[in-house]
Image: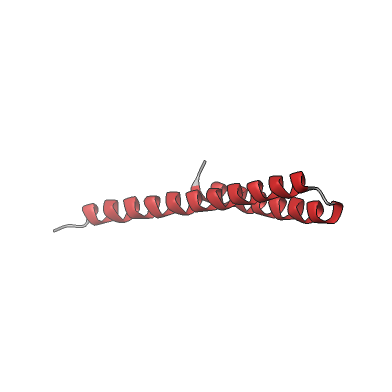
Length: 71
């Protein structure tokens, strides 16, 4: 999975988690609220992973570009 697809999946999981928490509040389901909080945290972790992958890719590309420059 690329950094951007990790970030997209993370945003989706965060949104779904927040929705589950809201529904859990409305219907009084502690289980649904807990599942929503867990899914929201999973989404946050996925976004962080995507950011890290993108940062690593950028660093590698910069290093490769620096190596290609004549001394």
